[in-house]
Length: 457
Image 1 (tube, rainbow, N blue to C red):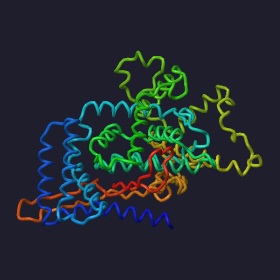
Image 2 (image 1 turned 90 degrees about the vertical axis):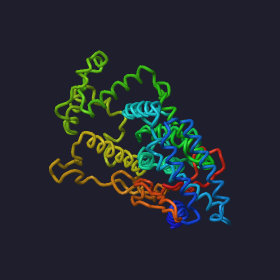
Image 3 (image 1 turned 135 degrees about the horizontal axis):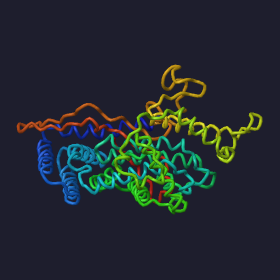
Image 4 (image 1 turned 180 degrees about the vertical axis):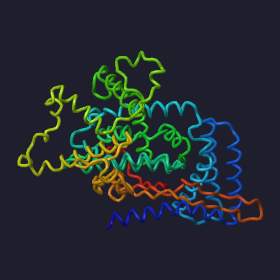
């Protein structure tokens, strides 16, 4: 009950932050502020993109407006929290309006976006937690699914604070998972947290991640990117750097094995996208025309299963199953302690099966059913509440993850100049929703004093 009350309170507070700014901008005495904001946006939009000068221009404007707010009678006697609320509202409005002008407009940012996305797409085909030296006690991929979902929301928002909230929420879910799995007297540290964050980032693989990170770096109000928020954001930058430079050594494997895995991953990705799965040894020398040929028909999940079964029969089948200790067990052999491991394995298996089916465009059919016995998803139960972060699918309950996230607002909000001058409107975009605030979950490996972070979405 206490947790629910806290989440409701935090969500209510973050919503008021945005609407408080809009209400104050509607006051007649705020007319000059509204005109100043409008003029800045118009003037800035006419300049050519330049990351350095753009950053300085926006940060300088934030600092100037913060000082002006504090000196204005409309904010006389206001608390620091109320002044900060106004500052956050200004950042949200300004950056939502300037978003098309400043986000992913630099060629180098776009280049790194593509490199990061494509590399993660390949590595996620074969990476395992042990490749990043994640301790066995923490290896629970099911508990990390909500963290992936939080990170994947980053492109749903435009304001730097909202995007940062997605990163913080992702990190909070990971920290909660690690603390829940930790052994008594041995809390997780930074060396435990960062590898899991890297793994989650590779699996989530949101598009334009680099552009999102540099966007936050450049345009999040510098006075607000401090404490816990700064610590978690720095960890995400470290994760990005690790992935961009990843090689065999980084994954605890020799380079030849790494290259074989990458080549196999290219074949898998090419097959799922409709390209011919040509022989790995001849890929390097094949013509561009052959590479562009498409499969006339994508194999169904059943076809793939049958094909794999034939390969297993031809080879030494027993060697393929050494890593699955329960395969040959009877019910009488199982202990109560085996239930959790079996359940986690089942959840991972279902998740991977559904993802594979979706990737191939095939129906999701549970064991014992047929594809035409009721349509997609017949008999496939949703994961339990602790693995959910949203309204459906594998997205889990925000309540269970400990990270309250309000959905984006879809309505437009206007601030009209209250004076007799020009009609100046401050409109809320479709994805300017007020939301995500982090809870009080301790962060694994945190080395700075705890600073409460209430981040709007």
